[in-house]
Length: 177
Length: 136
Image 1: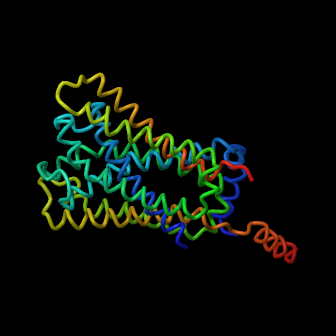
Image 2: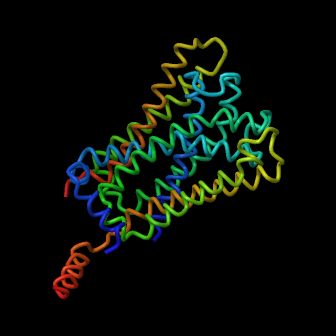
Image 3: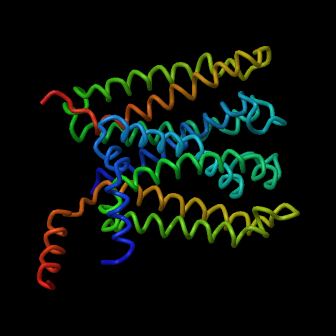
């Protein structure tokens, strides 16, 4: 077994992760917070991207809009990611086998790369970014975040047959001893 | 395959709808873009609110049509529809009045909090549809 799977099983079977998984109220409340955060603060990401594309608030310089929405974006990300980590922990072993979960994590990693790649030319530049650079950054950001949303919805549609997997591992293990 | 695709359009729609309204609400609360007028900012947000609304209503009606009885009898769905009607009525009446000259800052803040709470309730109601069992 990989260390990552061992870790996932350990997290999932901690008392608080199990309690969250089996709670008929807390789990949907955390999921609601996750989605309310996405709606309210994801909206700030969308408006930053729309301004980068020149589709809204054109009377304001791009750099002003980026700066004005930076803090709400960061607060929102903390809330959404916090709820996400809680939910992923409660089903860590299932998610280990879930391709949508890994696709979502990969896209989030790409978003970090995207932010770094356009850091100087768009997001933290001294001057207003060149329109072509701004449009490229905005379009890529919208595309990546849409991908994250689609994969996030996809996670719920995959249910790995854990009983069968456990039986297989058990079989393999007893074969060795 | 169609159902999850519709769900994605529904999510995209409510991000535009609630996100554009939240932007104006955060401004009413004085949390963002304090150098911009609330009326101006709501002018920027309004077309995206309408696009989002068109997306959620279309995708929502199609999702509903996949199993009308199931939704109609679901308590969370009933709650969501009530909250949605309230949120929309509030948005296009009292909330929009707060953006006109003459509205006090205090009233604007109260309206912003109510608006955020109403839209959060709509989203919460939607999530709970999948967790509440209707009559069998």
